Length: 371
Image 1 (cartoon, rainbow, N blue to C red):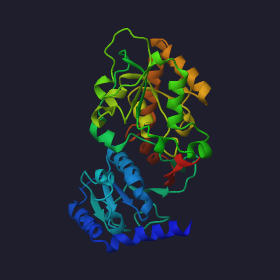
Image 2 (cartoon, helix red, strand yellow):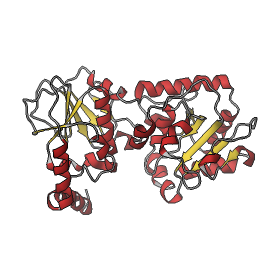
Image 3 (cartoon, helix red, strand yellow):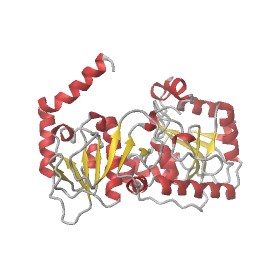
Image 4 (tube, one colour):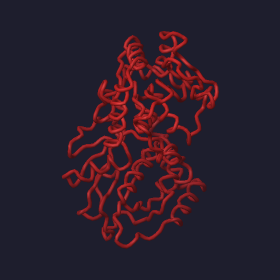
């Protein structure tokens, strides 16, 4: 670790004890805690590293959502450093939105059913199932002992429209859709090519616009134009960038449900992006290059369409534009079922807690490691 990185980490550890806003955050959070309900199925989450707050604590939000979905009562270890950022991390606030309890670290009198911690060992009940977080960028073996944290529906989308269920057999007005941020300064960084050997989001969109006939590409300039009003027009590609056609968060999943295919471009500096999982949840078939970054991997012409370079991108886009409704329906059902089996809330944690191993490792940043 470089000197600057070490200094930054030291500063982040120290500020929670010095700055008044962080001390206030911890006190406010402690005041909101409730007693552990009698007979509750308890999960204790005990974190000591600032890594748990990465990306505004969106991954912490996923862990808490998974636990709550399986009926666990959320109980956090009462650690000042962890609680000091609850009011200042955008998605951490969502993790504390529902009732929670606090316990003294290593209190072995708490009848916990599940422990999730980034510590190598703990002093809670030895009979509890334990999940140890590993923050290194390492691929898990996906065995009974190792698991990789999956990607997921963005916390804001989940809390605004996650209950929106797609119709899988009704014809959809959009054949291929891309929607999202496409700023060149963010989404055309060399890291995707140099580290992952992938086309950037900007390269993918530029290639589509350059290779397809202009009559096959739509670029709406406002949300009201997203769904075409003309009937009987040939299938085409709709590119709705945030810069020109922003989709409100509560309309995001319903909009994806209007598309047969979703052009799932990579994120800023790693392949996976929330919109891939959201497309699967909407039964919108992904067109993507990084199919193998999900676990299990997506399969070409089973639940997605895969391209490897700009030439094959044009080929699969044309395949999507000319595909029969029967073929589309089969792929759509498969894509939605993949989401239900592996990425709907609770599906991942259910696999972990039913592992026969009493203690397992969860790799927190596995999706950032090149394959």
